[in-house]
Amino acid sequence: MGTLRRLPQPQRTVRWCVERQVGGFQGRPNKDEDTCYSFWIGGSLALLGAATLLQRAALSAFCLSCQFAHPTFGGIAKHPDTRPDLLHTHYALCGLSLAGAAGLAPLEPRLGVTARAAARARGCEAEGECQTCEEETTVWDGSLREPG
Image (tube, rainbow, N blue to C red; front, side):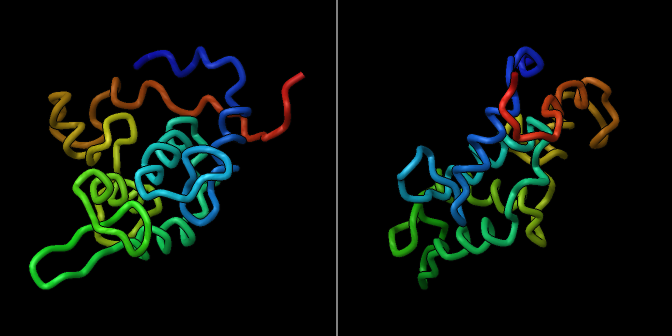
C-alpha cells in the first residue's frame, strides 16, 4: 500500500487490464475468462482510476452466467457449468459490485471488502469521513497511448 503513485507508466498497466476483458476477465492473454479476475483486474482498474473502462454489462453477464443454483447450496463458479466455491463466489461478488450491480454495496478495491467495512476497520464512523481513506487513487491520465 502507498506505492501506486510510483508506477512508472500506469497507462500501460491500464491498457493491459482493459485488453484482458473478453466479457469477463482473463488472467493472462489467450486464457479462459474466470470470475476471480472480475475482482483482481476490475479492482486494479478501479485503483488506477480507470473503472470507467469496465464493460459493466459484459462483466455482470459473465459473472451471472457462472451462478450455480441448487436446492441445498449455491454460489458462483470459476467458469460456467462448473461447481462453485467460496473464493470464486467472493471475488465474483466483488466484481459485480465494481460493475455497479443492483443490491450490492460499494467495494473498497484495495481490500476486497465493502467500503463500509473498510471505513469501520479504519476507525471511521462512516464511508468517506476519513481523509486517509481517499489518499491514493487515480494515477492514470486517461490515455491508453504508449509513453514516449
